[in-house]
Every structure is written in C-alpha cells, then in structure tokens.
Image 1: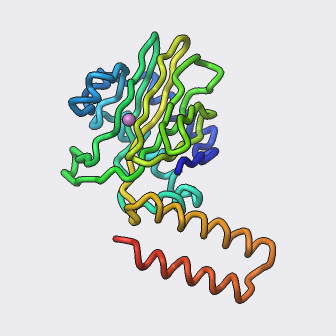
Image 2: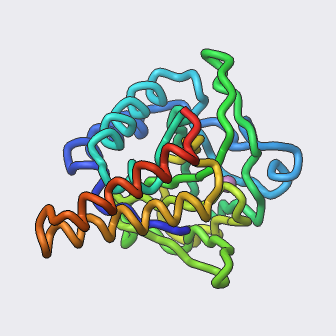
Length: 226
Ligand code: NI
C-alpha cells in the first residue's frame, strides 16, 4: 500500500528543519547504502550521528507522534531515526530495494524495514526532476509531494529517485518496523479502521460500530507483535 500523509510538519517545523540543514555538513550518500544500492546512489546525505540530524530527526519524530493517519497505516513498533538527503545538479538514485535490516549505530538496535517513508522538505516548484518512483502491483507510481507531506510505501518495493535537472530536492527518509509485519494484513487493518471511522461519523456509536471496533482489535491482537 502506498499512502500519502499530508501536512505532517507545520510551517514552523519545516522552517526549523531547513535552517538546520542549510548549515549542516553534507556527506556522500553512499555512507548508508548496501553494496548493490551504492552503485546506484548519487546524492548527499547527513551523517547519522551529526547534531543537525539528531535535532531535525527529533522534530520529525514528534510530528509523527501527532499523526493518527501515520499511526494507523504503519502501526509502528520501532522507527529508524530519520535521516536527511539532498539531490542537486543531476544527482539521482537508481532502482533498488532498501536493506531489510538496519542497525541504529548509537544503540546497536536492529530495525526490520517493513515500511519506507519519505518526507518531502522542498517545495515541488523549486526543483525539476527528483520524483520518487515506486514500483507496486499497479505499476509505477511517481511521487512528488508538497513540503511537509509524507509518502509511506512497503519496504519490499523497488524504487528510485529520478535525476534532478534544476534546483535542490531536500527530504527526510526513514524506515518503520511495524507491529504487523505483513503488508496485506496491515492494509486490511487500515481499511477496517478507516471504515469504522466513517461509520461512527455518519451513524454514531451504534452497536454495529462497537462490534466492528471489537473485530479490529481482535484482529490486531491476533497479528501484532509488540
Ligand atoms: Ni531506497
């Protein structure tokens, strides 16, 4: 499932993150790439352990905490601390699948990458190219979102970032280990949760709404690892 989560960041948070990134020390993006993806990756990235990454990452995590849509779609168990990348002057990232397991350097904790997320930080009018292209069961999806919006997609997807032909593309990216590992189960829970919300909005807390909510929680109990 591909899910667009709009307005994850407020205007203030976006400004704070951009200010932190402007003066940060960018490095070659291959610092976090696996062997195959290192061949395909041509971008700039902030080191995991730098001050700007930590502060901007905390802003992103706090913003995610507020997002009910992100929570119900991802059902996060662990979130890899957000990283930041920059593409300009023809940079791109060719087709690849993200590594299945990522280790958080600071703690040594391993995170299984059930979901990948990209949070767009530059206004789409300020750069040309740079679309995130995700191959899913319905074909290629080309994604370029307003600054502050996020796309969530399965970690199993082949994806790439198209070359930048003008301007600078800034983004945060990270991975989520979900309480529900399987994409199809997570999708079913998400659809059920959204349907229950609509039933409650249109019909109130009827007995049917209570029963359906029970089904949601009982499925979650059956499938979740916490
Ligand atoms: Ni990737």
